[in-house]
Length: 367
Image 1 (cartoon, rainbow, N blue to C red):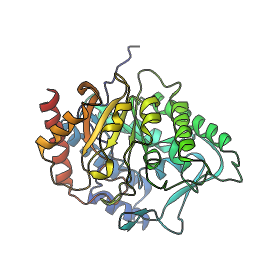
Image 2 (cartoon, one colour):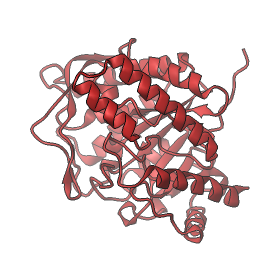
Image 3 (cartoon, rainbow, N blue to C red):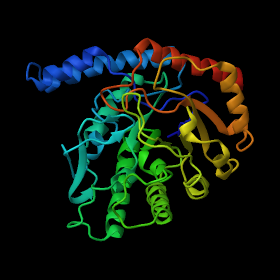
């Protein structure tokens, strides 16, 4: 069988989630109230996914996603379907800038392993059939490091963090194999946890480890998961500082993690948040190996609909070439448009206009 090589990430790419149309919001409400069945909800979601696949192709994107339309949150829907993990409603949400998120999280209830009947696998197969050969079907899942957030590991079940680490790594290796066997060739690991290791005060640490130890552990987890990945599977990671209703969770450049993670993480690309001053400068990019992972500069924001100044974008890309060659750079929004079902505060029309704008500017920069 001939292997089809996917050249992702692409010059114009996007993180993954898209604003849920009103029809999906209404269908979810109807399902919760018991007026439609799970199958009817699934059918409505499928119809809306078909529309946004067409729309992504129309604006010129080479990689398309399902918009995460079947999920409530970017991470919990995947994690709570692993063996040994459950979703629950805690006493409070996460603190974002000026807002507390909807209360929902996951916690460990048993030994962790991959669920071979995980719904995301079947959903990807359906999604890939919708896409066909018109574009590359990109799948997004939370990074394994998300399971190291404070309060998730059950110390009665996993008193030893090393045993926990080994089980998380194996779970994700099995998950990656399952997606690969389902036909996935472009997989993204979304990672707020690693980005948080740069914050002045680490927002989620109950391990007793220092920042340096946590950074080393995060690298070990990431590379342990990637160790046997198939050569023709592109895996990228997205390092985000929180994205909820156009707000953010924390600040901090990538300087603290760059010497370890940028230099040594064996991904094919880094999606990096660079849409405002909270992100710091491009200097940490000097740690990306020359000829190594692609660097997807998130110099466009998904938090509002106003289009960025084109000449400023070109100047920022030029500035980044002080640290990374132009051929190793791509551009995208800094995050998805709807990391949770609530969505960011902009219109669907503004979302599509911004994605097309990114494609058009990429052609001006790279031809």
